[in-house]
Image 1: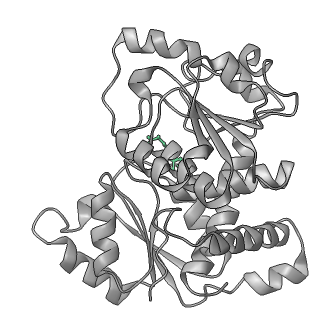
Image 2 (image 1 turned 90 degrees about the vertical axis):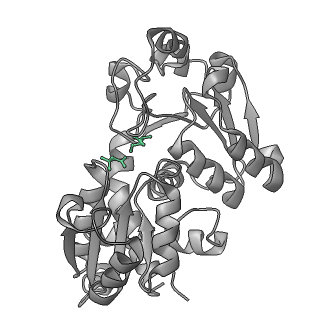
Length: 310
Ligand code: CP
Ligand code: NVA
Protein backbone atom coordinates (compact mmCIF):
# COMPACT_ATOMS: atom_id res chain seq x y z
CA UNK A 1 0.00 0.00 0.00
CA UNK A 2 1.22 3.50 -0.86
CA UNK A 3 1.21 6.11 1.93
CA UNK A 4 -0.43 9.08 0.22
CA UNK A 5 -0.80 12.29 2.24
CA UNK A 6 -4.03 13.62 0.72
CA UNK A 7 -6.34 14.73 3.51
CA UNK A 8 -6.19 14.70 7.29
CA UNK A 9 -9.49 12.80 7.62
CA UNK A 10 -8.01 9.83 5.76
CA UNK A 11 -4.90 9.35 7.87
CA UNK A 12 -5.18 7.45 11.13
CA UNK A 13 -4.84 9.93 14.04
CA UNK A 14 -2.05 7.67 15.39
CA UNK A 15 -0.09 8.38 12.23
CA UNK A 16 -0.79 12.12 12.45
CA UNK A 17 0.55 12.07 16.01
CA UNK A 18 3.60 10.07 14.89
CA UNK A 19 4.31 12.70 12.23
CA UNK A 20 3.95 15.49 14.81
CA UNK A 21 6.27 13.70 17.26
CA UNK A 22 8.87 13.10 14.54
CA UNK A 23 8.65 16.76 13.51
CA UNK A 24 9.53 17.78 17.09
CA UNK A 25 12.76 15.76 16.89
CA UNK A 26 13.45 16.99 13.36
CA UNK A 27 13.11 20.59 14.50
CA UNK A 28 15.51 19.99 17.42
CA UNK A 29 17.98 18.45 14.99
CA UNK A 30 17.65 21.43 12.64
CA UNK A 31 18.26 23.77 15.57
CA UNK A 32 21.59 22.23 16.46
CA UNK A 33 21.09 18.83 18.12
CA UNK A 34 23.99 17.06 16.41
CA UNK A 35 23.08 13.55 17.63
CA UNK A 36 19.55 13.80 16.29
CA UNK A 37 20.76 15.46 13.12
CA UNK A 38 22.92 12.41 12.38
CA UNK A 39 19.70 10.32 12.13
CA UNK A 40 18.01 12.64 9.69
CA UNK A 41 20.56 14.25 7.41
CA UNK A 42 20.66 11.36 4.91
CA UNK A 43 17.29 9.72 5.29
CA UNK A 44 16.11 10.73 1.79
CA UNK A 45 19.36 9.62 0.16
CA UNK A 46 18.85 8.39 -3.42
CA UNK A 47 15.27 9.70 -3.59
CA UNK A 48 13.85 12.24 -6.02
CA UNK A 49 10.84 14.32 -5.02
CA UNK A 50 8.83 15.85 -7.86
CA UNK A 51 7.04 19.16 -7.36
CA UNK A 52 4.20 20.05 -9.73
CA UNK A 53 2.30 23.25 -8.93
CA UNK A 54 -0.64 24.53 -10.98
CA UNK A 55 -0.98 27.58 -8.72
CA UNK A 56 1.59 30.04 -7.34
CA UNK A 57 3.39 29.25 -4.11
CA UNK A 58 6.11 30.81 -2.01
CA UNK A 59 6.08 28.81 1.24
CA UNK A 60 4.93 25.37 0.13
CA UNK A 61 7.36 25.04 -2.76
CA UNK A 62 10.30 26.49 -0.87
CA UNK A 63 9.67 24.58 2.35
CA UNK A 64 9.35 21.27 0.47
CA UNK A 65 12.47 21.96 -1.58
CA UNK A 66 14.51 22.80 1.50
CA UNK A 67 13.04 19.91 3.50
CA UNK A 68 14.04 17.39 0.82
CA UNK A 69 17.52 18.84 0.32
CA UNK A 70 18.21 18.95 4.06
CA UNK A 71 17.26 15.28 4.36
CA UNK A 72 19.72 14.34 1.62
CA UNK A 73 17.22 13.92 -1.22
CA UNK A 74 16.97 15.67 -4.57
CA UNK A 75 14.22 17.67 -6.25
CA UNK A 76 12.69 17.71 -9.70
CA UNK A 77 10.69 20.87 -10.34
CA UNK A 78 8.09 19.99 -12.98
CA UNK A 79 6.78 23.13 -14.69
CA UNK A 80 3.12 22.83 -15.65
CA UNK A 81 3.64 24.65 -18.98
CA UNK A 82 6.54 22.41 -19.97
CA UNK A 83 4.79 19.02 -19.71
CA UNK A 84 2.07 17.44 -21.87
CA UNK A 85 -0.49 17.05 -19.07
CA UNK A 86 -3.73 18.73 -20.17
CA UNK A 87 -2.31 19.50 -23.61
CA UNK A 88 -2.06 16.15 -25.38
CA UNK A 89 -1.42 13.56 -22.66
CA UNK A 90 -3.78 11.98 -20.17
CA UNK A 91 -3.41 12.26 -16.44
CA UNK A 92 -3.02 8.48 -16.23
CA UNK A 93 -0.10 8.43 -18.67
CA UNK A 94 1.53 11.40 -16.95
CA UNK A 95 1.11 9.73 -13.59
CA UNK A 96 2.71 6.52 -14.89
CA UNK A 97 5.77 8.50 -15.97
CA UNK A 98 6.01 10.15 -12.55
CA UNK A 99 5.82 6.69 -10.96
CA UNK A 100 8.68 5.43 -13.13
CA UNK A 101 11.05 8.33 -12.62
CA UNK A 102 10.27 9.76 -9.17
CA UNK A 103 9.99 8.44 -5.61
CA UNK A 104 7.44 10.91 -4.28
CA UNK A 105 5.33 13.71 -5.74
CA UNK A 106 4.01 16.95 -4.22
CA UNK A 107 1.02 18.38 -6.10
CA UNK A 108 -0.65 21.77 -5.84
CA UNK A 109 -3.78 21.57 -7.98
CA UNK A 110 -7.03 23.40 -8.51
CA UNK A 111 -9.38 20.43 -8.44
CA UNK A 112 -9.33 18.02 -5.55
CA UNK A 113 -10.74 15.29 -7.83
CA UNK A 114 -7.61 15.51 -9.98
CA UNK A 115 -5.45 14.94 -6.89
CA UNK A 116 -7.39 11.76 -6.20
CA UNK A 117 -7.08 10.67 -9.84
CA UNK A 118 -3.31 11.00 -9.50
CA UNK A 119 -3.40 9.03 -6.25
CA UNK A 120 -5.50 6.25 -7.79
CA UNK A 121 -3.04 5.74 -10.62
CA UNK A 122 0.21 6.45 -8.79
CA UNK A 123 2.66 3.85 -7.54
CA UNK A 124 4.57 6.51 -5.58
CA UNK A 125 3.26 8.57 -2.62
CA UNK A 126 1.38 11.77 -3.47
CA UNK A 127 1.37 14.74 -1.08
CA UNK A 128 -1.41 17.32 -1.27
CA UNK A 129 0.26 20.75 -1.41
CA UNK A 130 -3.18 22.49 -1.54
CA UNK A 131 -6.30 22.19 -3.65
CA UNK A 132 -9.37 24.42 -3.87
CA UNK A 133 -10.79 22.31 -1.04
CA UNK A 134 -7.94 21.48 1.32
CA UNK A 135 -4.48 22.35 2.63
CA UNK A 136 -3.45 19.54 4.99
CA UNK A 137 0.31 20.29 5.16
CA UNK A 138 -0.47 23.82 6.33
CA UNK A 139 -2.87 22.70 9.01
CA UNK A 140 -0.62 19.97 10.38
CA UNK A 141 2.15 22.58 10.67
CA UNK A 142 -0.32 24.90 12.44
CA UNK A 143 -1.20 22.19 14.94
CA UNK A 144 2.50 21.49 15.50
CA UNK A 145 3.02 25.23 16.10
CA UNK A 146 0.15 25.43 18.58
CA UNK A 147 1.35 22.37 20.48
CA UNK A 148 4.96 23.49 20.71
CA UNK A 149 3.83 26.74 22.34
CA UNK A 150 0.75 25.73 24.34
CA UNK A 151 0.80 21.91 24.58
CA UNK A 152 -1.84 19.37 23.58
CA UNK A 153 -4.54 20.82 21.30
CA UNK A 154 -7.16 18.29 22.45
CA UNK A 155 -10.25 20.10 23.76
CA UNK A 156 -8.94 23.56 22.82
CA UNK A 157 -11.06 26.24 21.15
CA UNK A 158 -10.02 27.39 17.68
CA UNK A 159 -11.91 30.31 16.14
CA UNK A 160 -11.92 30.79 12.37
CA UNK A 161 -12.82 34.33 11.26
CA UNK A 162 -14.01 35.53 7.84
CA UNK A 163 -14.47 33.18 4.91
CA UNK A 164 -14.72 29.38 5.09
CA UNK A 165 -12.19 27.91 2.66
CA UNK A 166 -9.72 25.13 1.91
CA UNK A 167 -7.60 25.80 5.01
CA UNK A 168 -10.66 25.72 7.26
CA UNK A 169 -11.74 22.43 5.68
CA UNK A 170 -8.41 20.87 6.66
CA UNK A 171 -8.78 22.36 10.16
CA UNK A 172 -12.17 20.64 10.41
CA UNK A 173 -10.63 17.32 9.37
CA UNK A 174 -7.92 17.84 11.99
CA UNK A 175 -10.46 18.77 14.67
CA UNK A 176 -12.28 15.49 14.12
CA UNK A 177 -9.03 13.49 14.19
CA UNK A 178 -7.42 15.25 17.17
CA UNK A 179 -10.57 16.25 19.04
CA UNK A 180 -10.47 20.02 19.34
CA UNK A 181 -13.29 22.52 18.84
CA UNK A 182 -13.82 24.98 16.01
CA UNK A 183 -16.04 28.06 15.99
CA UNK A 184 -16.71 29.73 12.65
CA UNK A 185 -17.49 33.44 12.71
CA UNK A 186 -18.24 35.22 9.44
CA UNK A 187 -21.13 36.43 7.28
CA UNK A 188 -23.75 33.75 6.49
CA UNK A 189 -22.77 33.87 2.81
CA UNK A 190 -19.24 32.72 3.67
CA UNK A 191 -20.08 29.88 6.05
CA UNK A 192 -18.76 26.37 5.36
CA UNK A 193 -20.39 24.59 2.43
CA UNK A 194 -23.19 22.06 2.91
CA UNK A 195 -20.65 19.34 2.10
CA UNK A 196 -18.35 20.50 4.91
CA UNK A 197 -21.26 20.81 7.38
CA UNK A 198 -22.50 17.35 6.42
CA UNK A 199 -19.04 15.90 7.03
CA UNK A 200 -19.01 17.32 10.57
CA UNK A 201 -22.58 16.20 11.26
CA UNK A 202 -21.68 12.67 10.23
CA UNK A 203 -18.44 12.50 12.16
CA UNK A 204 -18.32 14.63 15.25
CA UNK A 205 -21.13 17.24 15.40
CA UNK A 206 -20.11 18.61 18.80
CA UNK A 207 -16.78 19.98 17.67
CA UNK A 208 -18.20 22.68 15.41
CA UNK A 209 -20.35 25.75 16.06
CA UNK A 210 -21.19 28.93 14.16
CA UNK A 211 -21.19 32.23 16.05
CA UNK A 212 -22.06 35.28 13.91
CA UNK A 213 -20.78 37.79 16.49
CA UNK A 214 -16.95 37.90 16.30
CA UNK A 215 -16.60 39.36 19.80
CA UNK A 216 -18.60 36.51 21.30
CA UNK A 217 -16.78 34.01 19.08
CA UNK A 218 -13.28 34.90 20.28
CA UNK A 219 -14.17 34.76 24.00
CA UNK A 220 -12.09 32.00 25.63
CA UNK A 221 -10.39 31.20 22.33
CA UNK A 222 -7.05 29.42 22.52
CA UNK A 223 -6.31 30.10 18.87
CA UNK A 224 -7.71 32.62 16.38
CA UNK A 225 -7.13 31.90 12.69
CA UNK A 226 -7.96 33.71 9.50
CA UNK A 227 -6.96 33.62 5.83
CA UNK A 228 -7.39 35.78 2.74
CA UNK A 229 -11.03 36.44 1.98
CA UNK A 230 -10.32 35.71 -1.68
CA UNK A 231 -8.38 32.49 -2.31
CA UNK A 232 -6.35 31.85 -5.45
CA UNK A 233 -9.23 30.04 -7.14
CA UNK A 234 -11.93 32.57 -6.08
CA UNK A 235 -13.40 35.52 -7.96
CA UNK A 236 -12.88 39.00 -6.54
CA UNK A 237 -15.59 40.07 -4.07
CA UNK A 238 -17.93 43.04 -4.52
CA UNK A 239 -17.54 46.00 -2.17
CA UNK A 240 -20.70 45.08 -0.23
CA UNK A 241 -19.17 41.70 0.72
CA UNK A 242 -15.88 43.32 1.71
CA UNK A 243 -17.82 45.74 3.93
CA UNK A 244 -19.65 42.87 5.66
CA UNK A 245 -16.42 40.96 6.11
CA UNK A 246 -14.72 43.97 7.71
CA UNK A 247 -16.51 43.10 10.99
CA UNK A 248 -14.46 39.91 11.08
CA UNK A 249 -11.08 41.53 10.48
CA UNK A 250 -8.55 40.39 13.08
CA UNK A 251 -7.45 43.46 15.03
CA UNK A 252 -5.76 43.98 18.37
CA UNK A 253 -9.11 45.24 19.67
CA UNK A 254 -10.88 42.02 18.63
CA UNK A 255 -8.14 39.88 20.20
CA UNK A 256 -8.51 41.87 23.44
CA UNK A 257 -11.91 40.14 23.91
CA UNK A 258 -10.11 36.80 23.98
CA UNK A 259 -7.85 35.12 26.57
CA UNK A 260 -4.58 36.91 27.27
CA UNK A 261 -2.68 33.82 26.07
CA UNK A 262 -4.58 33.47 22.79
CA UNK A 263 -2.45 32.81 19.70
CA UNK A 264 -3.14 34.20 16.24
CA UNK A 265 -2.29 32.30 13.04
CA UNK A 266 -2.38 33.19 9.38
CA UNK A 267 -1.04 30.74 6.78
CA UNK A 268 0.13 33.64 4.55
CA UNK A 269 0.09 35.25 2.06
CA UNK A 270 -1.96 37.93 3.84
CA UNK A 271 -3.95 40.83 2.46
CA UNK A 272 -2.87 43.24 5.19
CA UNK A 273 -5.63 45.71 6.08
CA UNK A 274 -8.33 43.33 4.81
CA UNK A 275 -8.75 40.11 6.82
CA UNK A 276 -6.06 41.20 9.27
CA UNK A 277 -4.83 44.57 10.53
CA UNK A 278 -1.26 45.44 9.61
CA UNK A 279 -0.12 45.91 13.24
CA UNK A 280 -1.06 42.34 14.23
CA UNK A 281 2.11 41.07 12.59
CA UNK A 282 4.21 42.84 15.22
CA UNK A 283 2.08 41.50 18.06
CA UNK A 284 3.48 38.75 20.29
CA UNK A 285 0.25 36.73 19.90
CA UNK A 286 0.89 36.41 16.15
CA UNK A 287 2.89 33.28 15.29
CA UNK A 288 2.65 33.46 11.48
CA UNK A 289 6.41 33.27 10.94
CA UNK A 290 6.78 30.32 13.29
CA UNK A 291 3.97 28.59 11.33
CA UNK A 292 5.90 29.21 8.11
CA UNK A 293 9.16 27.80 9.51
CA UNK A 294 7.32 24.79 10.88
CA UNK A 295 6.01 23.96 7.41
CA UNK A 296 9.51 22.73 6.64
CA UNK A 297 9.96 20.66 9.81
CA UNK A 298 6.53 19.02 9.59
CA UNK A 299 6.86 18.34 5.87
CA UNK A 300 10.16 16.56 6.49
CA UNK A 301 8.20 14.19 8.72
CA UNK A 302 5.37 13.90 6.19
CA UNK A 303 7.93 12.88 3.55
CA UNK A 304 9.41 10.36 5.98
CA UNK A 305 5.97 8.93 6.77
CA UNK A 306 5.10 8.68 3.07
CA UNK A 307 8.30 6.75 2.44
CA UNK A 308 7.67 4.37 5.33
CA UNK A 309 10.50 5.76 7.45
CA UNK A 310 8.47 6.48 10.61
N1 CP B 1 0.70 29.08 3.16
C1 CP B 1 1.03 28.66 1.92
O1 CP B 1 0.73 27.54 1.52
O2 CP B 1 1.72 29.58 1.20
P1 CP B 1 2.13 29.47 -0.35
O3 CP B 1 0.88 29.67 -1.16
O4 CP B 1 3.11 30.58 -0.52
O5 CP B 1 2.71 28.12 -0.60
N1 NVA C 1 -6.86 29.92 1.00
C1 NVA C 1 -5.67 30.32 0.33
C2 NVA C 1 -4.49 29.66 0.97
C3 NVA C 1 -3.16 30.05 0.37
C4 NVA C 1 -2.02 29.36 1.03
C5 NVA C 1 -5.75 30.00 -1.14
O1 NVA C 1 -6.18 28.90 -1.48
O2 NVA C 1 -5.40 30.85 -1.95
